[in-house]
Structures are given as C-alpha cells and as structure tokens.
Image 1: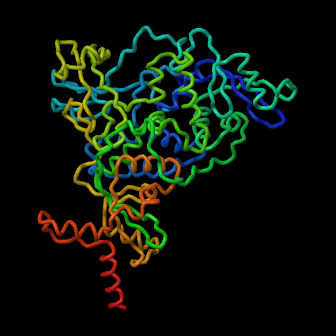
Image 2 (image 1 turned 45 degrees about the vertical axis):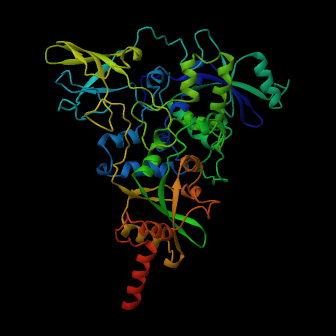
Image 3 (image 1 turned 135 degrees about the vertical axis):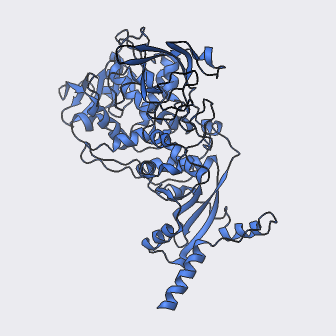
Length: 535
C-alpha cells in the first residue's frame, strides 16, 4: 500500500501482570499519524475498515451507506465523478498529510489531470478521463511540484524539529512528554514506585498497525494494548442505539442554515412505531451521501466536542483541543486542520444543512516540457491571495499557462464555485432504516414489506419535516446505530401529520388539481382484495 513509507519505532511501557500497555512514548512521527485520523473523511474510514486483509468492523450504518454509493447507477448522479468523490473522498489536508511518515490511504500524492490540447480554455481535473471545457478529455497526468523548503524533521501537526517527545495513553490521550507526565501516568494507573512489574519494549509501527489502531479506537478503550499485545480478539460491530434526541448547543447551533427544511415520507409499523423505510427526494439523499465526505474532526466539531462514540477515538480530538493552548501544535493552520477540518474543494453540497466549510480551490501555473516522444506537465500552486478574484481562463504562451483552474467534478465545463449536489434533482429514492439507498420502485417497496411480514393494516405513513436538528440526529445515529431513520420519529409522534392529512391539505388548495396518488396502504388494500377474490 505504501512501500515508500518507513515504519515508525515507538516505546511502550507494559504492565506484565495485567498484560496491558500503560502508555507509549514516541517522537512526532507517530503522533502526527495518530492526529491525521481526524482529517480522514468518514467514507475513507469506512473503506479502510472494509479492506479484505483485516477483520471487519462496521461503523453504525456507514457501511450500508457506503455500499449504496458504490451500487447506485451513475445515471442518478450529476456526473460519473460523483461516485468517485463519495467512495474515495479527498481531504483538504492532502498536501500536509503527504509529509506523514505513514500513509493510511495508499494515495501517495495529490493527482491532477489535464487534456492534451493545452489551450487557454483548459482546466485541471482531480479525475482521469473527465470532459474538459475545451471539448477534449483529461487524460494527461500533471505532476505537482512540491515546495523545496519542506523539511522531514519538522512535524506535520505537532512540533518535531527540536526532538520533542510525546506520551500516548492506552486510550489515546496525547500529552507532551516529560518526567512529571510519566510519573503522573504511573501513579494514575496504580503503579507508583513498584517498577518490578513493568517493562519497556520497543515496537515497530507500520501501515497495518496504524490501521488496526484506527479500527480498535472506534470500539475499544484500550487500543494500544489490543494492537501491540494482541488482546483484541474478534472485532465486534459498533452497535449503539440512539439515546434520545440531540440537544443543539455551542458550535452545533452556529453551523449551517436553521431555516431550510424539506419533507420526507416515512413508512412505519404502527404496532411498534418502527421505521421501515423512507421515500425521499434528491435533497435528503444528498444529506446522507455527503456524510461520507465529512472529515472526522469536523464531525466532533459540529457536536461541540462532545463524546458519543463507543471507543477512544474521541480522545485524539480532545488531545488536539488541549494541546493547542500549550503551543505544542506545529501551527495555527495545523490546529485548524485537526479541530475543524474543511471539506476538500468542491465537496460541499448545496443541500447540506450542516454546511461544513469547504476549502477554496487552488490555481496552478503549468509548464509543458517536451522530449523525443514524451510530454510532461508540471504544476506549481499559486498563492490563493493573488488568484482569489481571478476566475478567467489561464494565460498561455507556447510552453506554460498561468492561473490554471480546477474544474468542479460535480459540474463539468464550469470553473465556478457553485457547489451543486451529488444526486440529480429529479430523482426519488427508497431509504431503509439502516441507510440502504436505492432508486424508488413501488414494486420493490411492496416486496420489501412482504419480506418483513408486515400486514397492510399495520402500516402508517408520515410526512416528516427534516431540518438541521434532524440531520444532526441522523449523522449521530448513523455512526452509533443500525437504525438511523428511527432518530426522526423517537419522541415526536404527535409532531407530524399523516400522509392522508397532508394530502387533504394539498387537494384543498386550488393550485393542486392533480389526481390524488395512491398511498402504500391503499395499494396493499387493492392487492389484498385481489388475492381474496382469486382465492
């Protein structure tokens, strides 16, 4: 996966009697990779959890949502590139993370593509084979020149040039290393001055060990022990039912639009108030699919830093928040990348009510180098301040082009900053309680209900108004539960009108003269009557 990356050596202090890691001591390399977990989009984390060479652990409903994005026909998406964006989302900090000693994603560097015409109308694309604004296709790889001033001795997120050492507890709290810190940790763990039962070991950490740490951090409070002392056993699935509704406070209320809402039709079982599935338009599905693009750190940020996951990964976020006040983080920019990371350029979604900030798309100067039968495009990123107000095509001479823009993969032929959505606006979908998304087919809905053995008289339909609070509940539930849609109705039985009530209002409005559509209950009634008559 990452053959060019060197393993990291760390020291762990082990309680021999309990076979438990007390803490690890390392330089900045290990801590930088640990902190990089916060920059990973949820879709990337889900994909890494699915890799075949490891035990499998689901993240709530995220695996089903990821599979839905993988299975959906691209005819329902704005462009073919939308599927690539959802399944392999980029992170805004790719340039910084390329300096890490270990790369979990396997993507060695940022890739951009250019068409071969090299005209003034050309634009760059993050994806191969995309139609260019000039009419050709982006089939030429463009090499991005790295700044020569970057030093491997410098830390990426934490300081490292002065030989700083760090202490990492078994539950992934990160602290600046010092003798008082080590003594505090030993006292806290009940070791005191009795050092006879502890020993120091040196372990080698590669990509596979870091991937195991990532997985164990979602479900365990002792991931260091689990990975380095092989105490992990079988990876269990993350299953936690949503406990009540999320209360908006702090940073949650400061994010996104509070006014915009849209309707979703829920199909429930009356006897148990169980959500069976939902019928939804593109705007709701855009909400769900965009979860895959959210960086983990931004998820913690929009929930005000509150912990709601089962494992210890939240402690990494808490550590980043604590270390920023101790001048341990490498820079203010590095702090932002961890505690409220942005979406990668063009990954924003018009319909997303939470509105996580999107990074500005860069521009590049491009030089064309030719040889005997070969051609190479070399890109140099241009200072954003000098190009932020310039949206015109790049200026070209025979061998170079300045101010080359990157096209929005969701809206080809356009260099605008319009975010757009992933899903086409005229599409309707069926969404199950565990977030399996499929194009809406009433025949499929009927078979789904029959498969669940739900009698037609036990079905209820409701129209739910989904706003920011409901999306927050969905996001939280999708990470900790296998019944995400349930969060839309728990404790709110009297808030929403039934479909029949809603249809009466629509029919009474002179602007709605269309024939009243049949409800699922009415269809099942008709099918039931036919079954009885033929029996």
